[in-house]
Amino acid sequence: GAVVSQHPSRVICKSGTSVKIECRSLDFQATTMFWYRQFPKQSLMLMATSNEGSKATYEQGVEKDKFLINHASLTLSTLTVTSAHPEDSSFYICSARDPPRGHRTDTQYFGPGTRLTVL
Amino acid sequence: DAKTTQPPSMDCAEGRAANLPCNHSTISGNEYVYWYRQIHSQGPQYIIHGLKNNETNEMASLIITEDRKSSTLILPHATLRDTAVYYCIVSPRGAAGNKLTFGGGTRVLVKP
Image 1: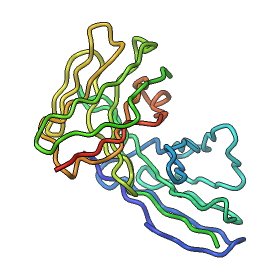
Image 2: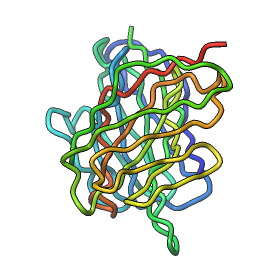
Image 3: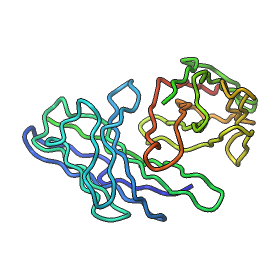
Image 4: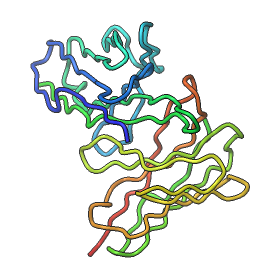
């Protein structure tokens, strides 16, 4: 399957600082990327949908001013957690939509995740 | 999007086939059945998806009932590395509809 990378894989920061997480599609162009968050022992929760060249669409309850998403190219989306607090500590996972090709329908591939710890 | 129901957990023996059921009784005509798995502390891994025909790839087989209200993911020869949480998700195809809503999944433990 297609490859999606995330950087960094792990980050520890102090409360009040901002953290940027990068998501890259390595072998395909992704017009749509998604950002998820997963707390311990819970399932993935979609935070926002990121479309290249336009504003992200946020899920209900997700603060767009706190979680800034930029999708400036077809292979890169970034999530910036602004003024991070301990309750933002979580596993952040991105995915990228590999569009249909021929008879193959579109499929979503996930990055390895970023573990954020806010002290 | 239609909801799915999966057993919370199941054990299976190494080397044997693992059959993972999923109910999606409210699935609509344009919704595909996707299966992903998540090994501890990693991002979900795509396994397979289908609309109404049975599908097979190098990882697994997907059997969808004729009425499309349920499906079964088959891991033909389970290994210890197949221990993971398996998610069954239904979602429409296409750019706008490809949001994936994750439920609780099935926690599969492959035992020696």
